[in-house]
Length: 506
Image (cartoon, rainbow, N blue to C red):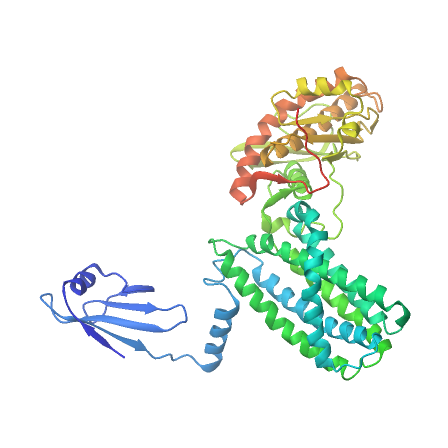
């Protein structure tokens, strides 16, 4: 319905060519001026100035929606289940994340119906599938409160590695469902099985909710995390309803017996765990933990390039991360001039932030050094007397690097320790990690030149000398790496170690 009004405000608005409200654009056509206003729900209104400069009115009317019914349904679905501005308002991978999330919730909802019905049969009841569905929601909600206490100590670990904990939560949930389905076959163990199953499922629910925020935060581009959260939960509810329907169908047809349920549970659990694993792989987390830092630095030293969070998601080991290993001496990044003593079979040039580097790959394989982060001081130092020496050697740093095991393998230390100060941030961790790689390379070079295999780095003087030699190389690499990390979108203001890692004060 058109509305008419006139006055100085409307004339000023027409002269300036501004929007009346909402999202729109200024269009020049047959009329003096025209505005198209688009609401958040897709409704369009056109406004035009009718009359001359000395007067006139603004005339507005609703533009009929000429889209076909399928197009309108698709638009309505996107409005309900995708954040505003999609896909520009989210990071890459959100669609993949949402697809696997939907599959995950279908599988777990169907699994819960079968497991809860089995639990009630074991208790001597004969519930219908609908009753089993209702009780499933009640039991899960009640166990959530008890599980919060048990999960409270895991908060830091979940911040450091939310993907792994999210997968672990679903493994626990599926184990609980299997125990519930097992209860009709073992009715004399009903209380034990039911207690373990519901405790595990409640714990998994708390972990899933605790890791949800960092996962959504990884996709937010325009401060729209609340919109992402709301739309993501809408997808979860819709998928869960589909899973409940599937569970009801299975429970009332092919899965009426306990044996049939036990056969169906592994299949649904496999689909559930596969989908949640792929769902986590799609999340481009941009915070630094031990695994991501290790992959970033080793890739940087071997190729001269820095991975973005989108690239990193395919290189993370979600299920069982490998222990951090420093870049092997066989694959090293050498600044000009190239380091002597390393025979290279291939070399190529790469530009890093305007600086030319040469990447040399040795034809001789070499073992890598394991870098332990956050180990107890008694293990990291080896001897109490080393603490004073390390504090002096790294007096200007918020970390200490030690190598208590002086024996080497192929010229490279078997294990090095990175001890972070309590106030250390992500840049300090990167600095220490990069220095550890350069130290390993310095020891390898000395071993190669001297023709030794086990005595290199055996004394404190040799270790100190290698550290000072490595500092020069690290100081040249660090600015390029830190600048590249910020450009790629990494957050270097913090380093997430988890609850088991230790920091120190000295």
